[in-house]
Length: 100
Length: 389
Image 1: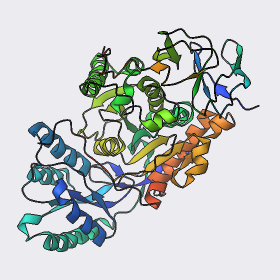
Image 2 (image 1 turned 135 degrees about the vertical axis):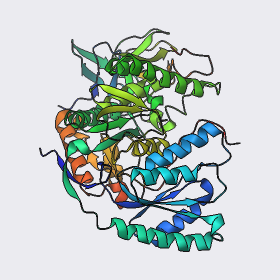
Image 3 (image 1 turned 120 degrees about the horizontal axis):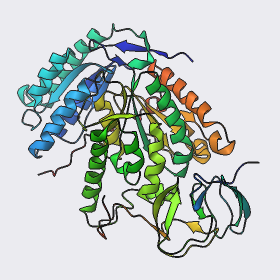
Image 4 (image 1 turned 180 degrees about the vertical axis):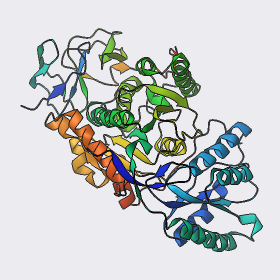
């Protein structure tokens, strides 16, 4: 069966949808370690992300095994993760964000 | 797989995949005349931009150096310089250096010949002479190691990092391991992924240089005092699921494969006969980045896209590679290689990387890309960092 979503790295706390997924769908996502059953909390479009587990406010969002930003609110398992709840750590002229 | 292609072998030893007379505007104010000459004569390609006057000396040097390097691109058999006559670009130095490089070059100066109509007439006559000189050049069979390829991604979405970029990375590794040369850039799209790239640097100096160009790019964006999101990632990237520059970068750098990074080139720098994988310091925007790779000597460019970027480049054929099945359906007229089966059928990334490699050989040997077929290949730009004054 065609995979509905993909996890890029075993450290990731988000998965990426490989097709449009409807709210309330029950899907199984394969990671290196285990298969995670998830109830999808929002309509997720192809290419968009959802949380693999509960993510605390100010936790790092991990994809490809690396940080892609910080959670600006708590994010439930199965919830859509995008610019409304994820902020970039870089290129932030507005807050003088870090430049190593 | 045969690792040979049919190309135009130049005096310089470099090999072109096209054989054009380059009608090169030396300043924004000469673009109209350059375009008219191009339209009058077959097999010409138009090299225009919006630079060359009322800029600071460091930028004027970058523009002059960029045009010299661009003229050395092996896809150009000869060059016609179209000058207004009062610009800040150093046109004499451009003409001298192209001549010293051994490429036929002629020059028309609008203010010296009595204006645009005379410049178009005399310039067209010169372009015809140059075309008849280069038109006897024939394609010859050469090893793939003599090819310089640029790589770019544009109108990216989340499928870029999952399908088209990894497959392109396979093709890039094949090219580099076969002794060829590859240039990638888009320094903005290293932000958040520089810790991965620097591990592949050939030495400490190159590693430091990667950090330096990324810091400088990020500083320039931050001087505007805002979150750069919307500028990078773009609204299209965001609609496609990319939430931050870090996510875009981590997906973007995969297209450079896994080989060692030999060095970092300045924007105006020509690669020449150097082999292996190189970074060029460019912004992400298409006309400036593509021109940067062509300035480096790239005679073919690989371009991955998620949402469907249609544009090519006037000097090098640009191969569009797409992994988004919805875009392949909707914008197939602009896509050269469909790799969406990586996502829809779990096809092997390696196998589709080999398909891209074969497409490089075909296009390098003369197969037209969609951007050439659709005539969607005229816009280009030279990247400068200073103000227009």
